[in-house]
Amino acid sequence: MSDLSRRKLIKTGLAATAGVAGLAVAAHIAQSYGLVPPDHGGIYGLGETLTYASQRLLTRHSLAREFHPSQISKPPLANEMAPPNDAFKRLQAGGFADWQLSVNGMVDRPASFSLAQLKSYPSRSQITQLACEEGWSYIAEWIGVPLSHVLNIVGVHPQARYIAYFSFQPDWWESIDMADALHPQTFLAYGMNGGELPVGNGGPLRLRLPRPLGYKSVKFITHMTVTDSLKSFGKGLGSASPEAGYAWYAGI
Amino acid sequence: MSDSAYLPSSASAVPAATVASRTSRHSVLVRLTHWITTLCFLALLVSGAEIVISHPRFYWGETGNVLTPTLFKLPIPSSRALVQTGYGYVLPDQNGWSRYLHFQAAWLVVLTGLLYAISIFLTGHLRKNLLPAKADLSWRAFSTAISGHLRLRRPSEAEAWSYNVLQRLTYLFVIFVLFPLVIWTGLAMSPAFVSAVPATVTLLGGQQSARTLHFFVSLALVLFLLVHVGMVCLAGFRSRMRAMITGRAGTQGEGT
Image (cartoon, rainbow over the protein chains, first blue to last red):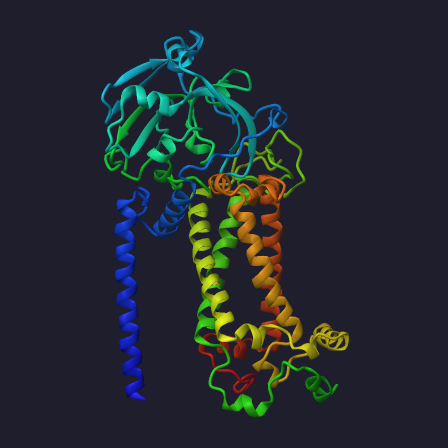
């Protein structure tokens, strides 16, 4: 009997060692392939990492579903949000002629873009769904310039891994990995349903990503930084969302 | 009412003689996966309820929001001011940790479920203990089992070693229909997942349909949980809990 339990103990010990070693190897591989999200620490880190890693492997190049014009939600829901502040209202009064998007960080040519400049680049449109983590959704046509076009203009360094982007509204910022940043459906959107992008939907400029949930599509964006690490941004969790208790990766 | 009239017709019941020679009612794997699933299910239930509270309206089709008609609304307050519930107050937002917990528990229960599903094929648990015996698939056997349940008849000791035909069919339905459905409808709500596998959502009629179906399949699982716990209480809470925790069965000690 004691022989059996010793054998059992050795077996269990070996299995546990193999398990831990396997996990360590898996973590190392995941890290080197960029499959570990910035909010991987803490009690929910395991689930978050599994979700991000598996979805990144599965969806690196997949395109969000596009819809027929007849499926556009009418009227489009403007998620209630008061215009952020007086400075915004002044820009709004001037027709956003002075709106600027600055791009810096790990780029060859840091630059600032006016709306007119962004609109002078080849425009694209997509009819895609915006789904909120609360459970509601709507379909709209989004018009803008693919983010990859602007990133090509500034010349992103090869070691870049993330883009952090910031709203005119204080304390609202997000970040995405390069797979999402270079994705053909990731737009700097300035138009919606054939017209200008309304302020209620994030106008004059919104980073529009149809694959993650709505909170990654930050409204009123003014600034972007290209980086290889998110540790020095905010609390180092990747974006304002995890600081507020929400997952950084929002593919589900 | 005599038990002997009931028992011999049940091909699933194990004769008492073999019962005594057995060492374990439930294998370690069944017990372990049972309790991990229990924990995960409770976590999914609590976090799922919190997520629903942020938008207690349900729709059919691709899209739905406060400007579109609902399929139905839950008469509860919401954690978001966007939803007019008529309550005049907004509950605190719990969506952040709820979503983290929901997906963490989902991963754990899916991996546990896979381990269980593979093992019941390999160990013969499926064939021996879950698939009903041919003799049990007759109307007579069904009606006997159903009337026994309806009269809330406490099962005999021999039955503590085996599942009756209603249990078997219920467990098979939960394992091979409800669990896969709840995973499918859950994944269909993921905009990134459906970008890779669009049929996940189009087959269900749209993302909001998937959300509504996810809610109803969850309700079915809650109903199963309630009936399951109710039957455990009826059959002898202490002995059945002991069997599922330690593996030892029998009713000795019950009621003494």
